[in-house]
Image 1 (cartoon, one colour):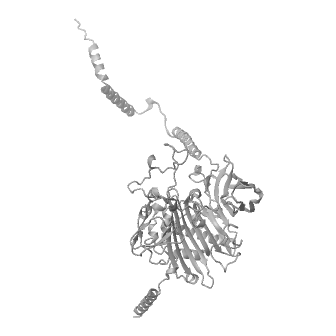
Image 2 (cartoon, rainbow, N blue to C red; image 1 turned 45 degrees about the vertical axis):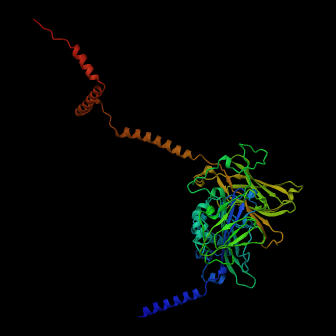
Image 3 (tube, rainbow, N blue to C red; image 1 turned 60 degrees about the vertical axis):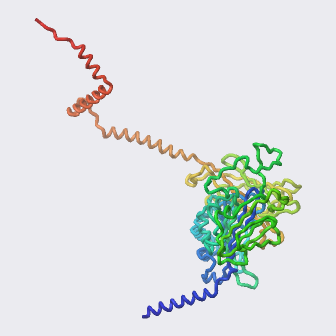
Length: 618
């Protein structure tokens, strides 16, 4: 009876709790999602997915997770993480054609995986221990190789990164910033699946229903970002904000290919859109034309399916889908969708019913349209162009050259250039130089400050941070030399002849309007990763040596074994039975051969004819 009453009371309390939760639902302002589509030149389309949710600090500490993913929150609590930034990226952003990066490069990472976080710890050893715990936990959560971010791939940036959130209760003494990168990591659909599980609707409704691994990883460039930061508004309670972002550049022509043609084939020559204004245009030479104005596509063609309504937990005040095209261009949407054109005349948003599928059609303008130029939104020019490559030759030494170009004609650019190099690339710091081209500037005034932390063999990598300033309309060539180390044969990967991946350089452009101690990052960008070829031994030689020695040992051992074990006797000393058996076998073999080739019959006939007759005597 007592057990029954206890069970009844527990059930009653649970029912009352559920009823209270039902009466006070989660505020819709705690979560919102939005998809922004922006056509780019050369048959490209930028799709930016953004998901954001908030949770108060009191609820976070009380383990009252509502829209915040519990799996990630427990990892942050256990590792003492105050702010987290994780990036999964692949491909290359073409700044020359596509212009400025989305989100001003704040949600972009280098090729592979990047992770940086602010950890609360008293000492460096404690921070390293928490960093190891964080990387191993995130490795299991996102099904990635983050557990390989060890001391050789971890640096402590000094000037490059600044926290995006508010940290009023932390000081520099007990806050440690650590940065790790895996440039060789391959981003695939195994990382997308746990990413979608962090969303409240799990990719079943809303804009997340458009995310498909086949389309995402078939794009020309893609980046997945996870950002967790505290936000403390003035006079309000601090909240912990998580922002999930996916950006990808889709090739419209490749995305529109029919399902019965899974292998992308180049179009015939007569169907290529060529720029006939070029002087070298001919029947066998084609320069691709910028046919952004003639782009035509549908949402189902780009993503392979319709959008399944909206997530019921999202904020209804935030439109789920926005399209950045001029208002003069025609756009067709599904029934029941409300279109709102913004005042900037280059974007429009759509309000969608929660229970209705959404489809959008962007037709190509007619050929008679005289305002074709007004149907194109020119991409913004970035604040800085950056290219990085290797110089030199041979397997012993080399060099790195970074070309930094300021496109502005009246504004100088100040930025911080950071490189995280592996320990087997030993920098000659005295060879670092900056050369200006394009203006009459002083080469010595380009480099403002240098922070260099040399690497330790098999313990930590090299860290280089340079504060630079580029005058308007000029180009700077930053170069330095390095020496290549020889690794142990057990430290080479299976594809050693391919080379070793070197992480992309991180460039943080400073905002002069903000003080140096505040949030000064105005623009971020990453260079391309590099492939360093180290002195590699001939790994076929061990196999050749093994085969040669095995053959020699087999011959020597076989001969010695035969001499020691085998007994040699003369033919007449053997047993008589054995000789009889040998004669019988030989006789049968010869008889079979004679019979096969007809030798025995001819020989028998000749013998019979040549046989002399018996003499008759009287």
